[in-house]
Amino acid sequence: MIGGEGVTYGRGTGRPNPVDVHVGARVRLRRTLLGMSQEKLGEAIGLTFQQVQKYERGANRIGSSRLFDLSRVLDVPIGFFFDEMPADVAASSPAQSRGMAEEPVKYELDPMAKRETLELVRAYYKITDPHTRKRLFELTKALGAAAEKKA
Image (cartoon, rainbow, N blue to C red; front, side, top):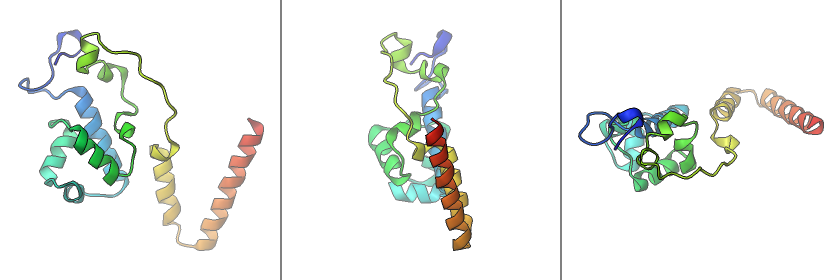
């Protein structure tokens, strides 16, 4: 595979493709947000933790069936692994480097797949007092309703 400005990526080059590195980083992000170890993720998809490490570093490319398994175990849509990919990384894909790519279809990111949402939910469930949690929930709903009225 060829990357931008004559840089070669892929098998036999010793350099992982930046797209594979990005996807691996997104796997690591989601796994850590869930508080899951590499070992537990590996067990869930039938791999060793060393294989999970290689996926997360981008050293091993993740095939479509494995990506499907990861999306189910990590409870995210497959698109999550490609979200927030920098333009220069996307340009290093084989189709891009050969000038065969079309403009991607834009879509609204599911708010449930955003890191901020995940962190908010985790913090919310750390509140042990049910009364406090209920009041925070009501406050959040009221703020959201007020914002909708302004829009």
